[in-house]
Image (cartoon, rainbow, N blue to C red; front, side):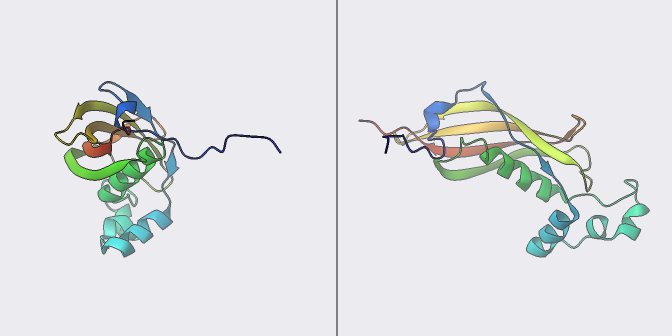
Length: 157
């Protein structure tokens, strides 16, 4: 038996990111199941998202993903980078813009830039604000927003 180090999720704290750092998420292909499950979870049963016949007669020509589904998926994708293991609180969203539709079969990913990384009045926490850009498989921007988090600082010895 060896003394191998047991490794788990990354242990990033507030000090791990500074303003200007950029993060990139993995991708997620949006499926019909995402739309149906989102509608069931939220009660957002709008025909544009769930009725193929209705959606065919819209300017999009087909069903599109719910805007809040895209936003939530983007937040979730960013957590997969491993930088959000010490979130104390999600503080909110600003400047949400849906710029292009997300269709069934589109693969989205997120690139986010840390726009603010600052200490707070609580010595055990810091604040991050990230500017999110949600891209589809063609590199087109489908959504942008800013999200802020209160993050634990590294424990002081």
